[in-house]
Every structure is written in structure tokens, then in C-alpha cells.
Image (tube, rainbow, N blue to C red):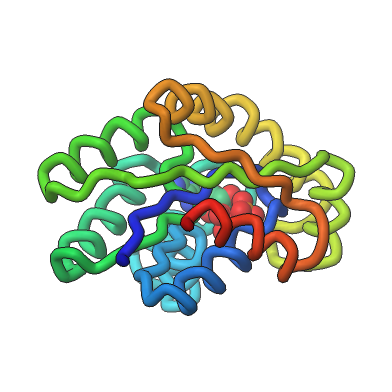
Amino acid sequence: MKHRLLFLGPPGAGKGTQAQLLASTHGLLHLSTGDLLRAEVAAGSPLGQEAEAVMARGELVSDALVLAIVRQRLQGQAEGGGWLLDGFPRNLPQAEALAALLAELGQPIELVVLLELDDAVLIQRLLSRGRADDNEDVIRHRLEVYREQTAPLIHYYREQGLLKPVEAHGTVEQIGARITALLE
Ligand code: ADP
């Protein structure tokens, strides 16, 4: 069974870790817009040069740029191959563009996994990770951006009957087991 999943949740909730795990155990394409953008930055491509400063400030890269990346990868995925989107969509226009793209591809979303965690724990996790955009001011700003722009997607997907909340505290294995249980 090839799943088509979306991971939603604040920065630091463990989306990347859980997405990677689930993608490898279930043979799904793992599409992390954050990872793809960081690879562009590292490669010094024009796209990466455009994204770098925006990411360092903890703001969202333009919808057009992110959409182009996602569209290309999803179109390249064999029909019937499952996928897992992590870090995308991040605002309502991205969610609407994704819906249009998936309608075009005939591949509806099966499930939206919402990872939930307290701010205090999120900040602790992010500070211990030490990525370039993981200093305290930028982290606070990313949480604000999440609340203002991404959190409205919770309502959007709940209304469509797709949302499944998961408590994101505990060990990687415990959280992974909660997510796997949703798929059965
Ligand atoms: P985190 O889960 O810690 O927020 P990500 O790797 O998902 O980390 O994202 C890191 C940064 O990459 C974001 O702060 C943002 O600047 C950029 N980014 C990632 N995905 C998107 C997206 N879908 N739209 C716009 N910007 C994005």
C-alpha cells in the first residue's frame, strides 16, 4: 500500500525525523521542502541564493519558488508511488496550489498527520539541534510564522476530514509507533 501523506506541525516537532523513518519503512518518496532548499543553498544555485537570506531570517521562501520544486518532484514520481510531504504546504495559498496539482495528477491526499508539542519543548529541541537558523530569536520568529501562516491549515484539513493529531512527546520510537498506528 503506497500512502500519500502530509506532515504538519511546528518547527521542532520532529516532522523531518518521523517523515524520514516512515518513508524508508514504507518505501515512500520523502519530500522535505526545507531539505531541498538547504541543498540548493549549499549548491549555490540561483534558487539557493534567492532563498538563503529569507531562510536565515526564519521567514517563508516565496510560494512560486517552493511550488516549482514540489511540482517537479511529484510529477517525476511514478504513478501509484507513494509520497510524504514534510514542511509543505506552509500557508493557505500553498495548500490550494497543492490541491490543484494533486487533482491534476489524480493523487488525492490520504491523511494529514499533525505533530503536536508544547512551545517550551520545541524551543529546547531546536536549540540543541544547532542548524544555521536555530538561534533563539530566529526560532521565536519561525514559531510566530508557523502560528500565523501555517496553523490555519489545521482547520483547512480538519474540515476536509483528513487531519489526524499525534502527540509528539516521547522517544522517536514511541512517536513513530503512534503514527504507524494511524496507517493501519
Ligand atoms: P523547520 O521544520 O525547523 O521549520 P524546515 O526545514 O521545514 O524546518 O524549514 C526551514 C526553512 O526553510 C523555513 O524556515 C523556510 O524559510 C524555508 N521553507 C521550508 N519549506 C517551506 C515552504 N513550504 N514554503 C516556504 N518556505 C519554506
